[in-house]
Image (cartoon, rainbow, N blue to C red):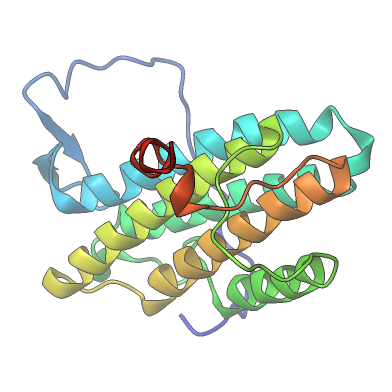
Length: 210
């Protein structure tokens, strides 16, 4: 999966009936039809990617509501599509992968790297870690970042047990970095203050100084 020679195939779905009762015994189906437990590690992986997608949806709504955030909403929408592509490949056993099945590629990874570099150019250098906050969208992007890191950890675990495309881990790693930079960039564009971690703001440190 080093590149894409042809377009991905479009999904062929008919979601007319939402409940099927087939999962009532704690199992679900992979793309290839295999029945697995709902708490299997592969399910945890693409379930967490789905959770991340939902958080990005909330952040995209926030981005759409403020023109100062430029094209961030468009970028987040693209990432949501990419996360569905990632979920598609994680939901498929290696032997069942279709040549044109949606997945993340080196192009998506390089695009994130370029976007990180562009956004970071406008930001002051950091002298400490950043506390989530400053603006609602920045906090939402931080929540997404932490879920992305959890998804990355799960995919790394899965890769120790089963075959997983290396691009899956690379993509999640870059995306978590991008979400961090975008959270700072959003505060910068909105003029929201950035709170840096200060160990002596802890209750114990303040009590000792009295």
